[in-house]
Length: 115
Image (tube, rainbow, N blue to C red):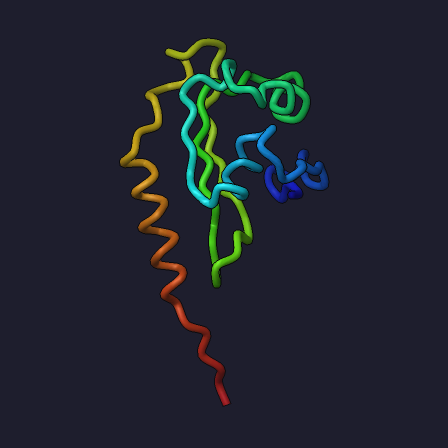
């Protein structure tokens, strides 16, 4: 997988395996929430790629985008802060449901060619 956003991370690659939250979302084909990223086994990857001199990531929501039965992308939303309370509220199942609703809305769009 390759980062496409934010621009300063564009081009960095993550392997698709269970050593990262995004890789796990791809392999398992399901979303994932962590409200304590520091306890995740993928912390080293986050430390190397995401925390470079910036406010640390405390919470993350990872959502695989599936199109025609293939995972084509992973959306990750993070909450940063020097502490959990600074990072804002925990992600909840309702946040996944909102992303799922948006994802399903886009999947139902049809491309119409004009003559």
